[in-house]
Image (cartoon, rainbow, N blue to C red; front, top):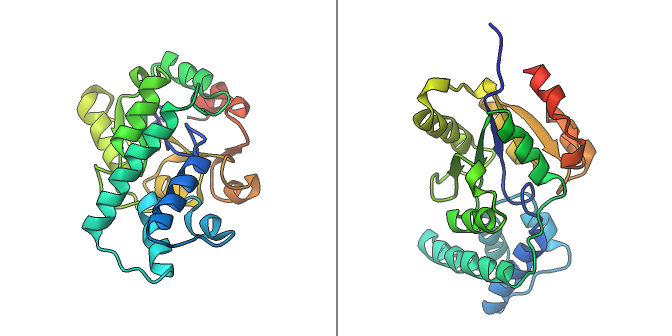
Length: 232
């Protein structure tokens, strides 16, 4: 039976918005408030490609600080508020080149769009609203929707479930979805549920993602939408 591409699911940080420098600054400020200092290269080693929760927990543990989940959640909520304040200072959001055109192509092909991210819903919605992209996304899975993080598959399973709830007529299956990911953890999560994956080399080198993704590109402008549709 012929397979059809019915949905494209994006990660958020490092795929939609180029915000790693902002996260690093906010994480460093949190540690500084605890009288802790990140060593050179420590952020890159511990945090790149991982959720803020995991990053902070490991950094604090590495510096001898034991923290419970409730306290960590409060710190992360404060970080999310500060993240939005940082973005509000900018004249324009640091979205990746070619993102808007690629989203328009998908939307105009009557393919559903979703997001699966470890970011908070407020962070995602702020960026999508300010960039006028929110209207294109049918479903958003954020850190509030699942306690597990990538490479666990809960977020990708949930996005399929939510898309089917919203559009029951499409009877969406994971194999009919394309995921856009920038990390090995995200690629593994999407592939483990049976999705095809584009790895975009915004965070990790091209060759690292190429080993794991179905397609790998440096930029959204390199993605050939027609070729992807033909594959499905």
